[in-house]
Image 1 (tube, one colour):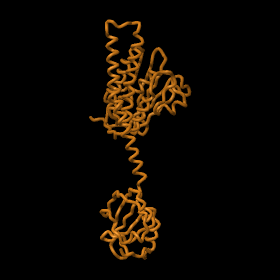
Image 2: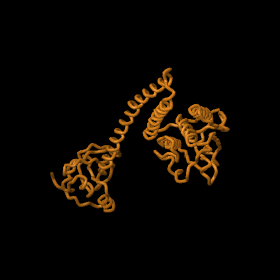
Image 3: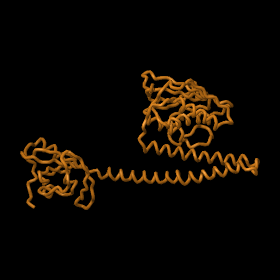
Image 4: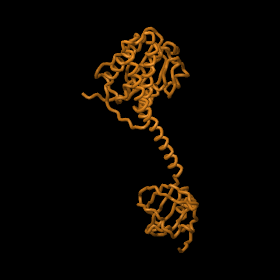
Length: 346
């Protein structure tokens, strides 16, 4: 192979830019033969410019497009590079400029993330399938024991506790699945009237806590308002209502739900005001993070409000908590949701 002078020819401004560029750049003639190689390309290939000039680049390319190429460094180390080729005039001839950026570290990081995601999905599948099925069998067995004529009331409290814990396991698995769904999927929104969903959530929490006196009031009516949301709205309402009941030691649980448009009329504002134990200022900052629980000894995983926060973020909304009575958190909490306004279909 005839060696060619690697000295940069005229048009010094352009040449200086190319020579000092951090990306590897080579100039190719119309046949793909290297006419010039900058210092960064020497580092990329592990070869000096005298060795590169006069050789075929060796990679297929289309001018104006970007592609990934596999480069073997002179040391034998494989390198992944991102290459983009454009037309250029060089020494009064039509040529190609190929810029190459080492993305090996990025590709290795992406592969590591993919492996970790695959491993997490595998564990989630185990939880979703095996543990869910086994726990369902335990629940069925406990319910059968409770309904059995031979059921001993002396042991009833222990059996009911075991059944309650089994249902909590089911809820935890469901919450983990929802968090995984929020992290891995794009969320589609639609125009929704929240009236029926809120009514169902209220009825559900009252039925599941039939041993407690629960009063939930609101002034929302059917076809009154519309928000941009999806079927996960039920999880938002259920989790906030459930928390208001769980962390409330009063004989009668009171929850008042207020709604209004924000001043810019872009969001519907929902306020869930309860007469529960309240949330201290330090806890207010952490309560929407995963595995953070309220300041009582109640059972729980701390995933409920993390799910609320995750769903609200996919709506491009906001959620936070304030004191029901300003300055006195012990008088209950006020959970505030901002959900984008939708358009009602007439």
